[in-house]
Amino acid sequence: MQAVAILVAAGRGERMGAERPKAFLALRGQALLLRAALAFEAAPSVGRIVAVVPEPEIVAGRELLSSLRKLSAVVAGGERRQDSVLAGLAQVPDGFDGVVLVHDAARPLVDVELIEAVAQQAAATGAALPVLPLVDTVKRVRGGRVVETLDRAELGGAQTPQGFRFALLHEACAAARRAGLTVTDEAMAVERLGHVVHAIPGSMRNRKLTTPDDLAWAEAVVAGILRA
Ligand code: CTP
Ligand code: MG
Image (tube, rainbow, N blue to C red; front, side, top):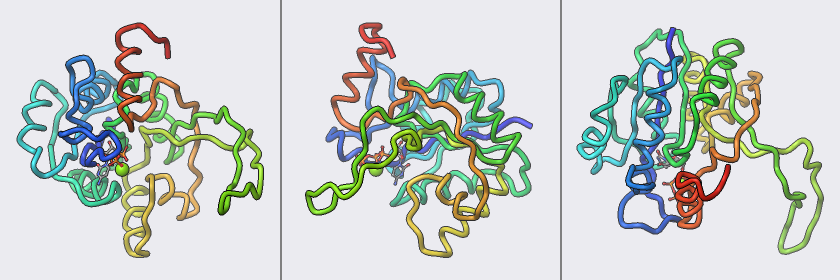
């Protein structure tokens, strides 16, 4: 069964500091949301795409994504990222027994290979995400003082797409909600249930664009000036 991709694009993009929400900013003439969505459009394991956007951008979002054959819905997001994920999950039919892939529209350079790798691992084991090893030595700092140096070999940055069997993700999100928890990614909600989440290698290219510098980096990558 083909996967449903939920593209979360309903953030305000405050750290980007632009006029429009981040997902609608152009990267070499193409909105981040469209660029990310085209990777899922091209991924063989994906059957449907749901986009979650700020409520005032629903019409613009439908227009932007109108050329996608796999587009199934464009819906309004919520206050926190996890609320936007729930809005996307509400578009998945009850009883769907395939995989859901949740992806940040703010990672527009995701490639088809990574999407396929996550989808396959999630279908096989229930839960998977890309993790990028850290390059810096990592310190725990309290009140301006280093209290601990962590073992970098065991640490990594969580990326998206994060893939889960739908029933598992649904249960995990509902449980987090009941517990009144704020989770920063879906894997965290699934980990809480005690379910194993498999890490597959992330990629530098799949960086989340947060600040204007990140956008400039992505422009240079797409222009072929930088390799990533
Ligand atoms: N997101 C969302 N709904 C929210 C908050 C975030 O769909 N309420 C999405 C963003 O659109 C983004 C992804 O989650 O694609 C990762 O969030 P982040 O990079 O933090 O984006 P923003 O929240 O938009 O940026 P900022 O935190 O700087 O305001
Ligand atoms: Mg945010």
